Length: 137
Image (cartoon, rainbow, N blue to C red; front, side, top):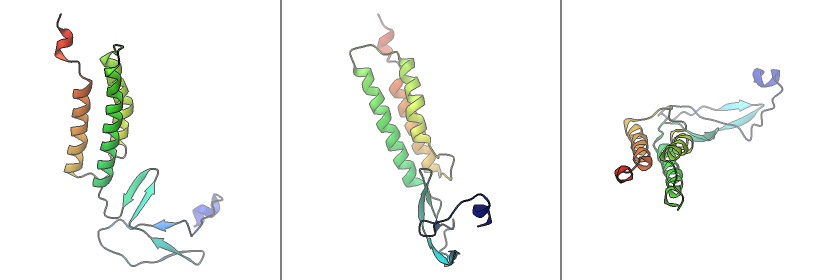
C-alpha cells in the first residue's frame, strides 16, 4: 500500500483480486481500505493466464493452436501463382508463428507441454522446407 501511495497510484479494491500459488486451498482474507479483496483461482496478466496450481497445459494448447493457425495462413502464400522464396517463408514463420506459439513458454512447463511446442516447431520446419523436386531439372 505504501508503494502505491508513494507513486500516486489509487487501488480500486473492487477490481483487485489475489492468487496464492499453491495446490492447497487457503482461506485467507486480504483487505485494502477496509474492503475485502476477492480470491481467484485464475487471472489474466499481460495476456498470460495465471493459474493457482501453476499448470500451463491449457495455455500451451491455446498457443500452439494459434501458432498453427498463423503457420497455415502463411503457407497459403506458397500456393499463389507467384513464386515465393522459401527463405522469405521461413523468415515469416520465424517472425510470426514462433513468437505466437512460444509466448510465455518460459513459465512452469511439464514435459508434455515441451513436447507439444517441439512438435509445432518440427511441423513449421517441415512446412517451409524446399521440396526435393524443386532442385531437379
